[in-house]
Length: 184
Image (cartoon, rainbow, N blue to C red; front, top):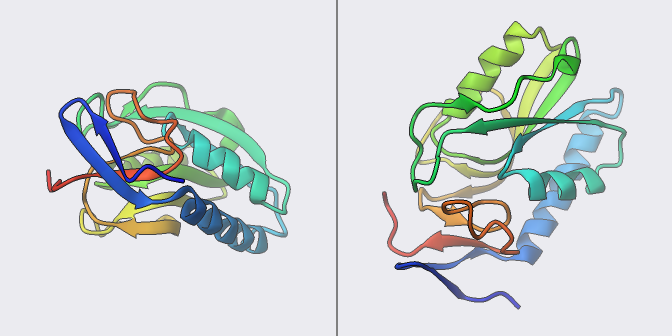
């Protein structure tokens, strides 16, 4: 049973999505991706650190073969909002060249990371690219060019849990929580 509230420092968070809701939606996303990529073996590119839980659950639910790759990017640091600057913390895997790449993101907020990745992958000459994101803050950005699969549209509240953190804490919460009265 999910805790209804979590306190982190002076901040109080309430449940936005339960573990059951998350897992049900991941199974549906995996079915759709498996159908769409049944004739190819895509490379699933996990954006670390936040997407790692979503990535593992998504891969286990796919009914197709896929390859794994990881990329470390940052745009938040320890803040509750994006810095607006995407920092590449690991090199782009060369194995992506001339392949179908599905970028696996935990959350699309400003769209800055998607813009950065789209350009980097185009330079690397991937065959095709798209993004699957567990969460999409639809109020914050209208950039959906490569955002093909979305788990949940959510409000622009700050969220933690299931891989999403606040200053590297709370990633292991099984549910996703939103900051009470958050609009910043």
